[in-house]
Length: 317
Image (cartoon, rainbow, N blue to C red):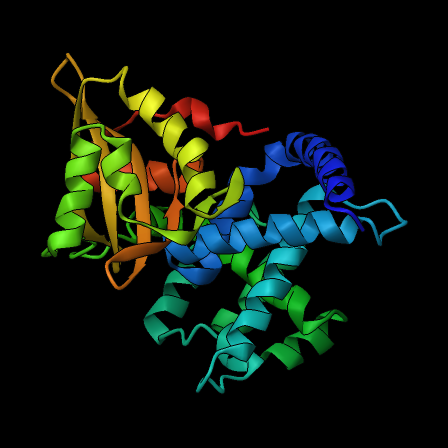
């Protein structure tokens, strides 16, 4: 098939994707929270959300019955996560190992103390599944048999119930060393200089000819030239209108990243973007940035104790 035909199809798919994003928008925040509950990592949660959106859109072409949008997204995310865990090398955890919370007697007692509150905040199936697993310590297959459902459905109900029960925990999942300064090599120092000086050419000089640029939730670019004429050019246009740019190389939630911030005229600091890069022989071969990842950016801003600058980026249709 000629490339031009594929390009025409790509344009059509972009329109479909835009419409799809509008329809699932009301559930995006809940989906991110659910993925974070499963993975317990902001980075892995973001990856799982992105993969869920890709998968759920592609599967739609094969569905002929009506679907509950939120339940559909959660089902895709759950299945993807379970598949990922099962495929991990040197990881032989059984489904029951993933399901059982390893609740101590103290935790079970805490749950029992709050039954009256829980019964008013959980659905009946969530409530029963939580009691059977976390208090009575039934295995997943046993709960599935008792409730006449699947083990996957049990896991989903228990996860949602725990999320409701642990809102404060989710807000306090930061590790003591969630943010840590790390040493930058010469290449990173040049990169930081490029961000601070608003210099797209300096940044481009570090890009591999075949660099892959992943603009999370927005697009993919293949090759240095494509990145220069698109995302890097767009970045330059934005920062030229901004005031002092601060760029730092840190470890955030266990991952080395460059955080890009702006100090505005009010002397307050705002988070612009988070950049993750992989290098081979001092050249950037993979560049992923998260300015369109609203939930992750919000969590990062809170972690860094700064304000979030790019709030309008959330709605990427």
